[in-house]
Image (tube, rainbow, N blue to C red; front, side, top):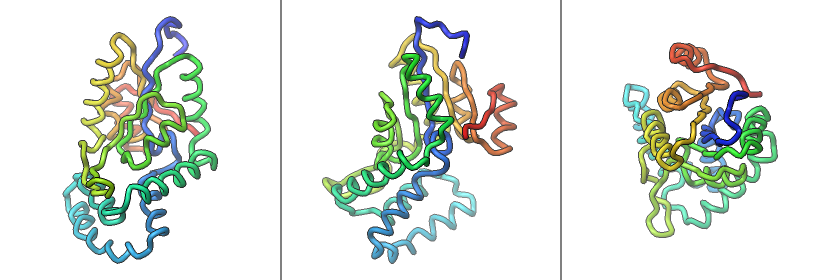
Length: 224
């Protein structure tokens, strides 16, 4: 981005899992909650039909995500969920579970005065805490339902993945009119919205996603 206009900030859109972090965050979050509440292990048998359906061709990741959250945390008090989320994020940030290379790029955008956006398919049970800790001004992620002070776990919004991320990026353009957009992601599903950005970089991706990115004219790299 050496040829950027110094008078015009960019909207820098970052994916979370595998882009900023070394790996997925939802499964560690759910497993950590189970460790705190081992009695909930007896409820997990209900997740088996969803896993079988996913393996047999029902590729609705939002449905699978919702069922996993409901089986592990459904009915949990907001205080219990918030307490675990605070612990989870405080452990995530300082213990090198974030990629130093990603943090360096994030810092460069911040130094340049760019608008920092976190766009993640992971749930709002903990993603907003991560975003605030890293200094993002706008955080968009999958939202889940509550029943008063108890977690329901069904999805309140569409799963922020694929075409839904593209829709979110289009809304961001309306919120930041006239500003160019640069998008960072790590998977083939991220290419949907990255193709619509003014600039994009696929990072830390597997071979298939890299090949797809090259076909789209999107450069690839690795953040360590």
